[in-house]
Image 1: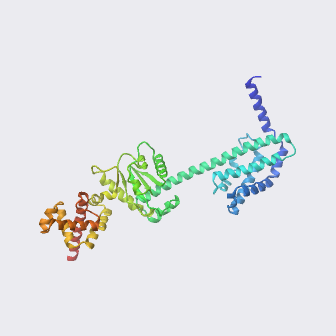
Image 2: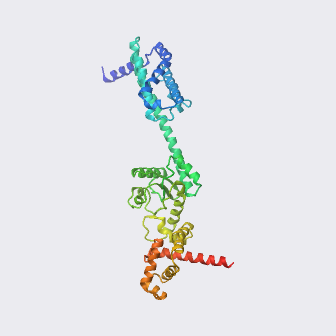
Image 3: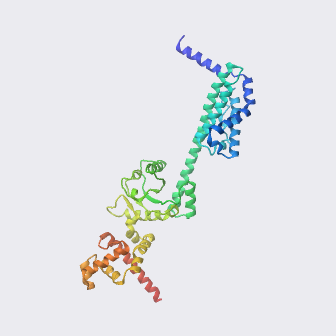
Length: 412
């Protein structure tokens, strides 16, 4: 006998075995479905600790689903290859909600325990020994197919959840960028299971042209997760906007892995907000700084919005103007004497010449240096540093304009 003939006969024998289930045996399964269900529930109550932690209604619903699966097995075992019998009849629209609140592992554990009881019940049958083997084979096939159906349900649910999360994530980033109400931002964050009270930094750059938008966002998620943090992102026009809770010292490292997802263009970090609701200001300052940075030479690829406060103020960014008033102008008005303020203004007007400022003030150069040191103590800005001197000069102009406006207002 050839191998093909043996294989053909074996297949025919297997098919005969699978179809040889007496109707009386099927009817017995239907009759004891209630008893089997109670046995299954008692078994999983002992063997699966999570089951006892469910509320009574959920346990009862799962019991109904188990009984439905047993009865469906009785129908399916008569015609296991009938296309009209769909496993979705067990996990259909009316019963699929019963596995909600359970993980895939928990659902499969319930299925495994149920089939163990069914198999044991078949083994314990005393009559029709030739049919028991057939029924056991059917039970194995049934549990496999039902397991696949459960997995398909969870896969579809996960895909649906993923699409919903992606839309919610995009809506959250959009709300932050356009400065939506704090309540709306917190609501979006809560829907995504974010800790809305953690500090947030907004990063703005351009995405790598090699990836699709969805792929870019997924890579950002993974890069942040590899660092032990979380990132939310969306592609808005030409920009990739990212919200991260990564500490500043990590973000300021140009070799931070998260920057591999961005293109080689400028990446701007807004100031860190205290919480998610305050992230809009971080985004606003990041975009404002990015606009002026793109017009400046020798700017590092990764920069912060605070690096460009004077340029932003010149460009009309009200946030930068507020920062200059808050950090420089108001502290000088409050804590610096008139002599210190006059010395600073004269020093700035002669472009950082200590000797020339001293000559025009009729004081010793060390007196000028002492007064400039007091400016540094009050504002954190060293007038002897060229970059900080530029910032002080812009603040000085704004302060003088405010003095003029106040003087004009008083004259009225």
